[in-house]
Length: 477
Ligand code: SF4
Picture 1 (cartoon, rainbow, N blue to C red):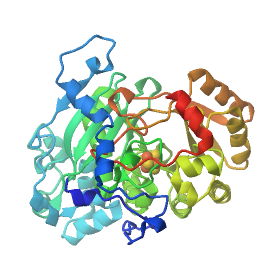
Picture 2 (cartoon, rainbow, N blue to C red):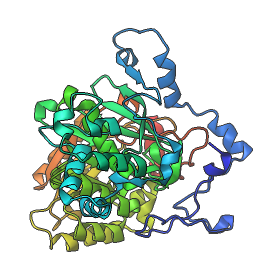
Picture 3 (cartoon, rainbow, N blue to C red):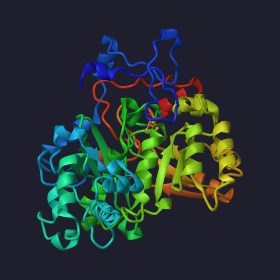
Picture 4 (cartoon, rainbow, N blue to C red):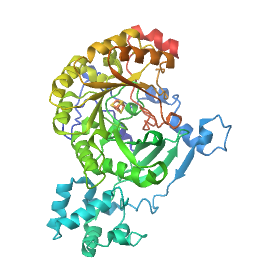
């Protein structure tokens, strides 16, 4: 990647449009503490060159012979995928001029097909071929599949007008992602690395939970992330760009296409991969609408969860216009801690965030927000924190999800011990809250919550640790 692309953003305007990133000349003294400039100074480079990089360890272990069975890497399975594989369908750079079918909601899609002289019924048939349905499971990625000539799909596609298929092959594009690699962790979690048309890489995670009838795909909404949450590896990358709606939808299509036969139906989608979804709200809401369309992927709206670090204006818009579920990363019970570990709190503090939810949820019927709480030893896991949560969320219909922190290189946090998590959970439950504890999944392959992405050689610097927390971080090191 070119070095010019590695400049850390200085300010981000929290707008609701997809073009929300603005670069403004600033003096060093005027730089917002929210977004720290990443400069390729010699000292930064020299410091960063000493940071252990876990992604390197993955590629190194892939070339090693199998080690003892206790090594998580010994159970790793890598599927290297050639860029010209049949599964990929081969993305041609010239395709950039074509209509992107998976970036359209159904109505828009139907309008385009009928504007080309075809009947609405043909539009519906094409839509079903792209997104499949429970009985046919097609998820077409190539024109051969649309024509039914690449396999035994003929009986399914025979009603599709041949001229329409030809027109589409000339003027439209069926897919936006190429599979680069699939990595399987010891617990069965799969991480898919996708290459985008511009060469950037995103990651998507499949979390099988067949026993409970719930297989989840965790999709990315941005390449990197600007939010700089201190416990998150993706946050070290900075933001490269927003994903388009079709790049988001395709992750769910690939999840079903690649894994339905092995792990079972993919029933849930969580927007908890790389990026802050609500900073890309336009494309995220469009992608979610496509995912819940009853004639297509048909995910239940309450099984499509959009997560946010707490962008208040976008939360309002989302709650007013979407039927999908909302998760808010809470992670602290005081502004002091949240300002440090989630710098977005300096813009939208705890009381503003929680008052907004309290107010907006009055107008939603049978709707509960999910609060995510990553437990960091000595930082946000005290008994007082648990008691404060009970007070903070009063009047907000909610569930609480306690998440084990997943360590990564360069992070000085440690996970809370299991017994302490149980004690914390019990206090919340006794306080009348619905609370879950979520075990880590896929962490041996950097596929767990907060572990996605590749900050490569330059990383966003960590923020200064408030003096009162320094002893607990040192103790936990
Ligand atoms: S936790 Fe989410 S919002 Fe925060 S830096 Fe990571 S990806 Fe971004």
